Length: 173
Image (cartoon, rainbow, N blue to C red; front, side, top):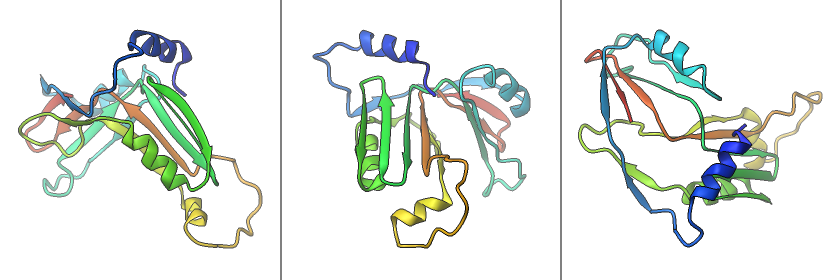
């Protein structure tokens, strides 16, 4: 969950008459050679850390690992109820969760970071559950009540660490 104090601070620092830009130009800063596990230990001190690890050695299948923490927003849905939060506001609605997700994503800016083009520059990270299929087609639900986890759960990360396993370098975007 996004820290509510951080969320309020971001909302207060964003001028009311200022629109979120459609595109952002990001910077890529090299950090040198970093061990991904040690880097994650440091990042894990933050809120809601993630580690998308490509531990395989094949360059074409597993070139990059991605790490981050301290999201600035989130999206969750369960069944036909969706809610989300960004520094620019909170929303919730009932209906098709994919339509709600489209609205959430359309409120986020796109970004470029120059060359080389990395496959992930930051943004939503999370999961789509198997049970989300019940929103696409009618599937009987004969199982017992579960853990009540969201069908979609995404968090928006403004900073991503990229470990390039081919070059052995780490970058922060």
